Image 1 (spheres, rainbow, N blue to C red):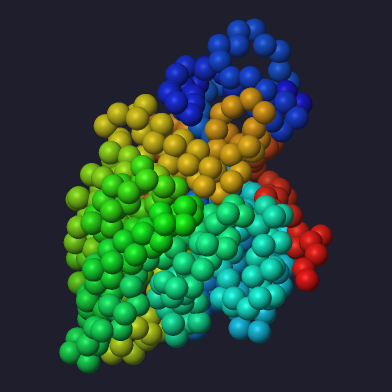
Image 2 (cartoon, helix red, strand yellow):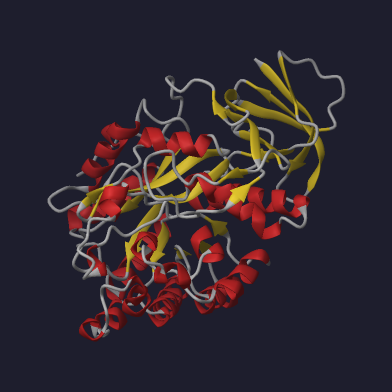
Length: 455
């Protein structure tokens, strides 16, 4: 089957230009002024941008977080993704107590296979570092699992990694190609906060429990370690301008990247001052420094814009006694809003906005995940994951998720309309509608752990 997408404005890795895109057997075969090419299917893209399939590099779906099970399954999360031009969803596998990381990976894969509408890539979160577990990590890295998530906080949850532990992993696994994703909040600074002196019934106290300094200090510590050991470091959900600027200053010195999230660019801590402010609790907290961080992101400082999507059912988000915000389900939805809010960073220049999506939501995530040989750009030979985007559709309210959950961005709207979305050349979305909701066609991007040998 040959498909020709013609008369669109294509967002290429280095520029935006008028171009046609030819697809055959699930791959992109040509990009440019193709003239009278024969094709079995023609998609007219006049007035639209042709983008590489987008990636949400940071999501949480179909998993237990603290007391609560997340609202989005692989089916619902990938459905919301695909309808908004996201053809690869990156999510996390966290090793539980008494469970090996390969076992955790197999369990996650069992939830996803046959139920995912877009492709899925997993980041691994190890929590045990015994010799056998480290050998398993080495096997997984050799098999193509490139990204490892570490936390400099959350001791009580059992996922904390000390700076010494991070140093050891940088030294041992960095040379094997590991890409380290680190949640940077300094645990000692957080532990030193006198919670008894705060009004824990006030959601805004969350910003005091997890102060900006905790993020900034942790980023500097982890950056110093990454530069010392030449490790590839990606800092997740940067919420402070000071933290972002540390990474920008040091990026020329090593393999450093970072992401920020829509909530830190368009929301601020005043949302926590509302009577229902607990519904906007996430970590790191919403901050007061939004204008400065937004200007950095607009200038291209963040390598990736991702959501940290973590949707809870309304009854779970409201399940607290109003006295201790630390018991609130902590996280916000975002998948369905991601391209819309990222576009608005550059909405005064449509070409720049299209290029911003192609760079920060496709090319850079694919490179950091190690799948740039398959995903992330409109280049011959890559998977034909393609989104045809109309920037002037009817204005509609944002929907961060399709399942019952409190909307993180109430009152926000967008005119973006995904006219067509192709997954490996197969039409999956037309005019924002999933064509075959009962036939999910997403695939895992990494091999099954059942095919690997762990000793």
